[in-house]
Image (cartoon, rainbow, N blue to C red):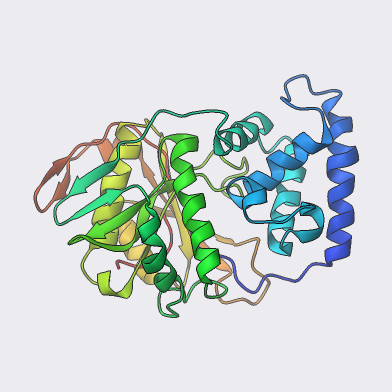
Length: 318
């Protein structure tokens, strides 16, 4: 999951007008001829799009009214998602299910509390992870492919959003713990931003990681990703893995290659402006059959997968 940076600054007032027209007029009008849509009212469309743009209930990170206070990048993402719904490129029922799951109105099959690997474990998030996660997000070396460092408040909001993925899908980004210490995260989630290789938002599963510098050079990104994928493929039954990152990010690509992924295409990231050196991206893919065809070897044992779909990106073999 390669983060966007230096996005073109849209006209805030124009975006707000587009948002009001989208949720108050265009979507409700389209709903009249779409019997398969789960909602009809403007506030329901707003809830679905804003929650998915925020990665959780929007009121947890944005003061109402959302159309006036939403950060421009998030409002732009919500607008893009709404346009994708109108074009039939995004599944409104699935987006609604995600929103309701984040709000505690739906429950997915519970994920195990942890997954054990040799010398490390993947586990669910805890409040005591806030401080080391904030330190990780404030490290310029760790955040070199992100638009900016994150504040303590932003890190805490991100941690809550990452953990909510488990409630929604039954899988999510696990805390990576080595020698009893928080060193970052690795795991799977569904991106909602439309991408050239994933025209229907939410139908691709992404696996990413972000590790503290103290964990770099130890193979933890690769080993943690293998364990997370074995769980996602086996327990969750996902069908395919795609990985994408900046062409310049060779460290991340080496992890993808170690996971057995095949490079399939390059694309220009739609959230990055022309001329940004990070705009050229590359996509890798790993089929469930290929993953299941051989045992994934660990230093202390063997893990077998069953069937799966995910996406890998982010830092190198940290």
